[in-house]
Length: 320
Length: 290
Figure 1: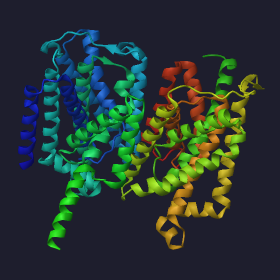
Figure 2 (figure 1 turned 90 degrees about the horizontal axis):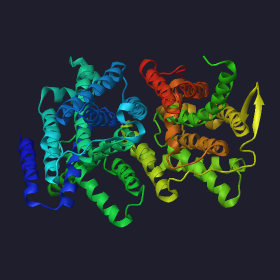
Figure 3 (figure 1 turned 90 degrees about the vertical axis):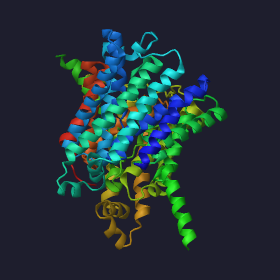
């Protein structure tokens, strides 16, 4: 309950920010932080709470993004319908990948590989079929207004991503405080023991990947509406998969606030690198990779673990 | 159904390409068989080796085949040091951490290459780059034929190393029973690093054989890494013979897929095999350990 109070308080403060901040630059930064936090929380739901490390979350992100874009451009439907269909399609892709891989007991490296391969298959497919615009990409026509889920002000987009991120964080809180979440974590910690206690590991993991996939798809919907352009490399490329896993790993895997902490840290880091190196190609991703290595080597619990360690050290020093 | 005059060259071409894929996959399967980790940095280390060959040729005038003396040793050293000082330290008793570290390494290597070398496509011109060999009525590029036999020779050398030398015995012992190997006095960390080094050394050979008929960009590893994973999974994780056969099969599938479905969709055949094998037969066609 204390976590819920902190979470709600935090999001109330975050939601009020556009009233005080008029600068588009700052609002854009906040939008990117919440967007990345949403991506990270989606991955965290499956990997942090469920123990299944996916290297291909772009499969869900891209499906959500293409869902909303294709429905608008090819069928002329409202993006609100696109949002629902995009998220549902991402959930279906997740259900399919989950069903085939968990059904055959794929774990660890095998699961990571199969998710990576599925994302690549979708990238190649979206590069080849005409209705996604193939390699040229797809452009959503500019029609500002709530009905078209497009906004002329950054504040509008900010509140949109704020609501989406809030939903993902509430879902993560729910995992911490529900029977389903407890079972998911039991499967993560010891699948055989969980099974012996009557937990259907297959169904629980399937639920985890669908929930995770839906939120990744939601992030995709936001991306499509914010940038109004998609191509196969953006939607299904490895950059999104890497960002999805980097954020919670930096912040603290399997923790409620880890993805937010990771998103803020990585955003500050990328701003600093941009100041030093300018927009030199490659350097920001190279630093992301280095951060991943350093965190895994020295801080396997992420920044959230840092707080825990230092608090424990302080306490033990005091008692000694 | 196209007639045999189109089909046969396509199959032969696929086999020569497949041998190179097999060589890349051999290193991967050795690493998997011994350390039980999937090296996500394999593709970017191949890219690094290709740049090595390129700069030796352009900067020092050392041809790709002369570089065969140097590159395997240099890449072996890179692999040994990476395992000893980075990957080996990262596990914290969880396999996921090793996956993440090799993923991180691949991101770092690839993007540093983008930063330093830009995304230009570079090739090494050799007098024999466009020579062809006629075989059964099919015309095959000479560099690919050399690469085919080079890959077979490397596989044979690896087999001798694994079965006939003291180091090979130590590697097999560690692969089978790590604790037991430690008890009989084998330095497990050293053997791990040696195995990783040998696996990466294979990439040095592959790069020298590949360069005369191929090109290098910072992203060149992508194309190889999933193919190499597919071969390793197809052949059985840790199986040498499996990697060889798997490489040839994938080479032919890619070549025929390109013939029937076009360049872009042809790759799907490989991924389809990959996913199907992972799902239905994760031990591969020949699922033995090293």
